[in-house]
Image (tube, helix red, strand yellow):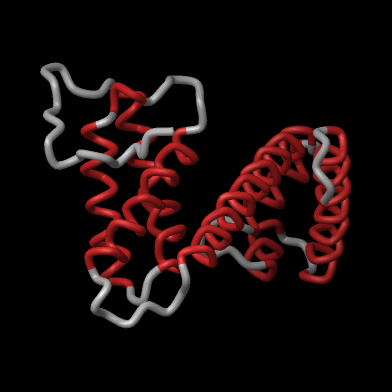
Length: 188
């Protein structure tokens, strides 16, 4: 299997460049990529440097990405190779983790990320199944700066009543997500 980041210094981006969907996926991947690199290196500065090198490779290899596949998994594979490349270049610095441990960490990060993605998808679906009033209550509560007291005040309801409703809705959502994950073959 070829290392996706091999020869990234010599690749030239062809005319035309990536399409809008690729750019959207690339942009959305930046934070998760950084967060998957960070535990594998000594500092935030090292993680930022590796992310930039990873971005160069991704943009140079954009034609190799197959639309419809998992962009983040593809990008994380490139990032993993860039972490190893960085570690080889920085061999004189203290290395805290062995490469085998790094591989295990990277694999665990990817598995955890996939699990969170599945949970988010299930939650989105479950939210759409709520009654309109319940969905509105949840959206108000979890809007930026929202609180149970603020929701109660805006609805003219006692705070205790709002908290009881929120607790009931959370239980419904939790059970719905659990059922969706089990139906999808995931052990919640």
